[in-house]
Length: 76
Image 1 (cartoon, rainbow, N blue to C red):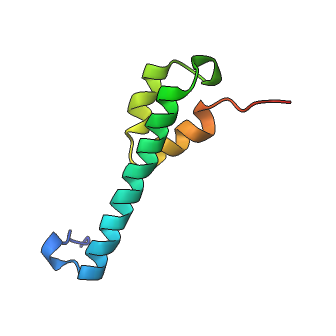
Image 2: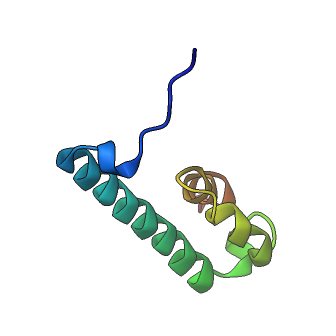
Image 3: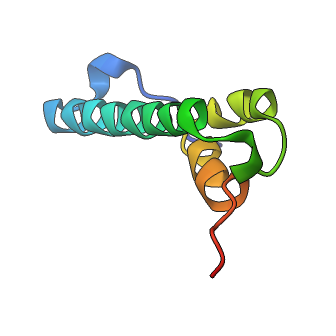
C-alpha cells in the first residue's frame, strides 16, 4: 500500500549527514530570525513582536514568512 517509514538505523551515513546539515541550517535560519526580531523596532514590523515568535518556530516556513512578510521594507 503506502510507503513505510524508515527507522534511523536504515538511513545511510550520507543520508544522516545530510539530515544533520539541514537541521543545523534550519536552526541557524531560525536563530537569525529571532535575533532580527529581538533587535528590530516594532514600527518596522507588520504586527506585534510576540505574534512572530510562534511563526518563526514553524520549521523552514516560519523564518521565511517572517523575513518576507513580517519585516517592513524601507521605501525611498
